[in-house]
Length: 417
Image (cartoon, rainbow, N blue to C red):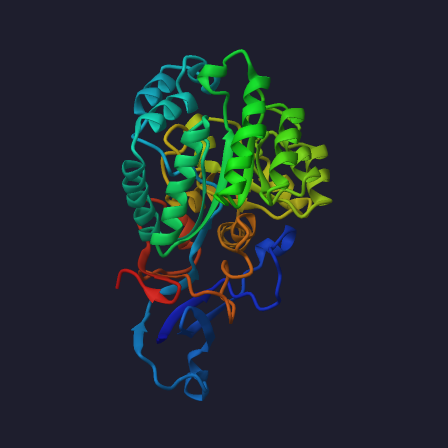
């Protein structure tokens, strides 16, 4: 199948220098082509350039389908590198508690939060979880996401964690979106282990990780290393056990306080450290000496009314930054990456160019798919967004209330023409 998209108003996020991600001041630069074409052959981007060159393009023959993108733009699809979208039901009652003034920690101490979701996961059938999650997958595709990381962590028992990971595996196999799975058994201490946190860590290390590893159900391992959750030493122990099964670390870090989570993530060459509301000079120094992607989750900060991560300090220091949705029922009940992109500008004062890097090539790096996705690059997989008519690419972060996606293309196939 050979697809031609022609008359593109602007082809956005072209990368042709083999970079793994974009960092520091380079994040304010964005390569585009106005009045462009793009050719997809099979699953891959085969060629692109100015419309004036199209008649000389050797690949401009035997085209099976043509899409006229006059007035529209083409972007690489979003990569959402941090979600918890496999869950049962919703938690709007806790939202009311939050409005009444209860903190995240207070809601968790009352058996709400993660423990509430864990109870529901234990009671839900695997098929029900799959169907609910499939709807969420289809929703995020319609809003521009072409790759997504999904965590377990609402199981908190051997069987329930495995149940969640089996659902993620089925979603991988049966949907066109690119999915990476993360084992997050250390998301909270299960209610049966209240007051016995070290025993719960033993369960994660001695029973959960071996079963997950033996069944090859997770690409990555995560730990909620933060105030009131898991300590640096416990995180170190869990990461050490998981890496023996080939699970690469991704860490919840420094959302609630200066926890040491960033440093332990860097120690284990974590692919990303996520949240990062509490990030100071020492944390920035550790990240600068690493290949770990700092990942911000503005949806959770917005929903919980938290302090904002010091994104401008991080970029000014030379760091890369990724943005992800944290799609989950308790603290960020939306997987709309267009909204996350707008939050990047509104909350973090990021330029639209910086936001585009943060939601494509950098977030693709943060979920380990940057060599195949995240930019307009010949040979990369054709996961593309054709927008509705837009005046400039700055409109992408300016207009936060509408769905600007017209057509989604995943693996070279038009999803919703």
